[in-house]
Image (spheres, rainbow, N blue to C red):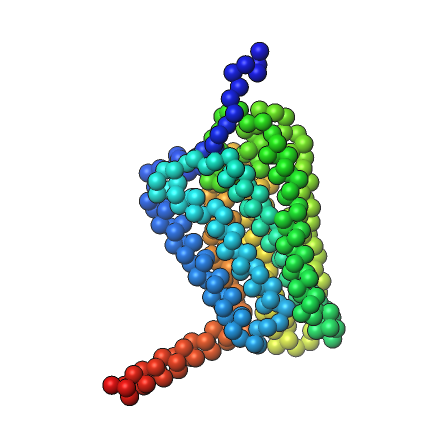
Length: 320
């Protein structure tokens, strides 16, 4: 008898911010500005690195990939969030929801692996400087970069498949502004045990393990740096790692707070907002403001632009 009135869900409703509807205009402009800054900042980092030969080294190769990932990561959730805030369009198709869920986690886990590779790169540069250029060849960097993408998109396949195969017969309201494993599993009419187990296993493997690897590598890096006699040498070594360490702390810190801490607060969605848009927006500025080589390349680009502008003005004056 319990199967008689079952209906199949045709869409989901992303109602994460519905209780803050009177603040929609404010939230919309904050999110829009953050998204624009995220896009412009990361594009600027990519262009800056690609146009300056001095930055064509493994560390900045990985930063380029990371900047591209950040743009994609934000673009998975923000356009739909802006639609919700501007038009109160809460609905998302079942296929769209599952696609968003998978791509979001695939990109997030790719970032986890990439940040781990970046910490390994810094470890080799500081702990094994004589063999660094031999080990981190261009070909090897491309292989490592490709593996991070492959692993990132393979790992969430199993929990995504288990979640998609669950039976959804109502309710269909997701208390977030994007589709995620846990909220969808909680809506399922069928037993989500296997899906929950697969999600937990993948989270431990692709998020918690990389986080501990980064911690271990940086402990070794700090031990090595502290053995350097000169203050200038210590400062230079720390400066090459500080940006990556801050970015890793923001990414893993906000992610762990969102996914590991006890749920139930109505402000969880604001923490998720930090994780999906604010952190990707801040990262380009962290690399610009704290990285000496990037700041030098940026100043050089500004000077070149001014010189080009002056040349153009002088040619215009001559032609008139």
